[in-house]
Image 1 (cartoon, rainbow, N blue to C red):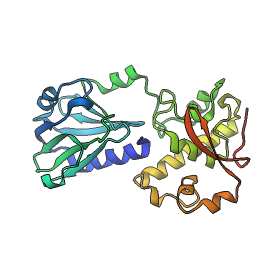
Image 2: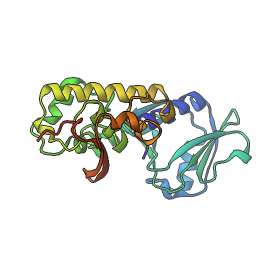
Image 3: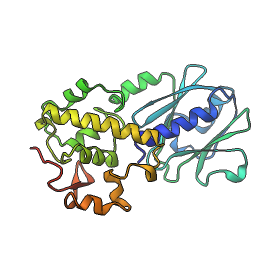
Length: 263
C-alpha cells in the first residue's frame, strides 16, 4: 500500500499538472471506488470547477475545489493517477477521467478497486470524523514522545496506527526501527526518552529523504535496510542475522541483536 512518501509524490505531480485548470469533462467508467457519490453526481459536481490547491495528511490527499469542497484521493493498495493527452495512453484500469481546459486528462487507475474517492463539503470535518492522527512529518518531538507513554503495544504497531501518527506503513516502519537500532517488537511504553527521540529523528529523516527522492526506491541510500531486498544483503549480514516474523499482524524484518529488544 502506498505510504506517506508515495502519496506525497502523487500529490506533487497533481499540483504540477492540474492546479488552476478548468475541468471541462468528467467521465466515470466504474463507480465502485466512489464512496459517497454516484458516477453521475461525481461528474456533475466536478464539471466546470477548478482545483485551486491540495492538502495531504498521512496517506490521504485532497484536491481542493473552487467552491470550497474537496475530492479525497485515498489510493488504497493499487490506486494511481496517470496524466495523458492521447487516448491511446489511457491507463488499462481507468475508473474515471477528468479532462481539463488544456486538453490534459487525469486518469484514475486502480486494478483492484480498493481506493476511496469522495466528494467532501469540508475536508477538515472529515479528518476529524475518521480520527486521523497528525502527519508523521508534522508532529513535534514532544507530542511524539507522549504517544509512547504507558503503551503496552509494540513499537511497530504504534508507528503504523494511523490514529496516532498518520502516514507510516509496513516498509517504512521496518526502516525506522532498523535505523534507530530498536527491535520492532519492543514494548512502546518501555522506551526511554532517548529511544523515542532517536525514533522521531529517524522517522523524519527517512520520510523526508523518501519524499525528496519522489519515493523512487532505486535511489534510496545504500545503507538503508530497504536495500537488503536488492543487492546490499552482504552489508546487512555483517550486522547480524536477518530475521522475519509477524509483528502487529504484519510480516516484519529486522536484524537479530543489532536491533535492541526492549520489554
